[in-house]
Length: 177
Image 1: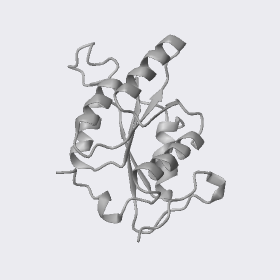
Image 2: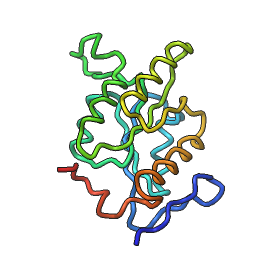
Image 3: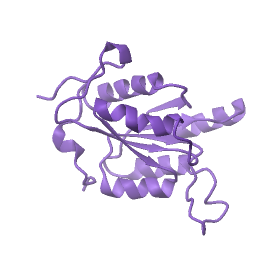
Image 4: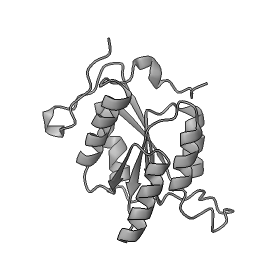
């Protein structure tokens, strides 16, 4: 029997589960300073049983999915498709929706939480509609703290993992066949 999931409320004792690990793919729109939430999330969540893998491009994120089975993906809509020096300007633009679409086509794809950081309401509404149409599990505004992300993880575990941490065998580094 798998251990129960930790509560979403950080003050209620979100505790690591022995033998369990929750693999999260995390993308960002550009390299960020160490104090930014995308740099703090992996460090703060690791003791809680969450293993976050950070990618700064959609291409890099897809390469990670070839090696690691993810239980969830947090995709910033402003993530570029490609950040290599030879990438065209079009490839250096928004790749978040493209990544969401590609992930949804993969067998045994992880639930995707879209991180929205658009400035205008019109942009945000259009991208929200696109993300939900493409199968996003949830859409959250770029967080100032981890509480919204903990709540989403709790809901995701309830819906996709029967309220339990994934079984230890499901956190292997091999992608689904």
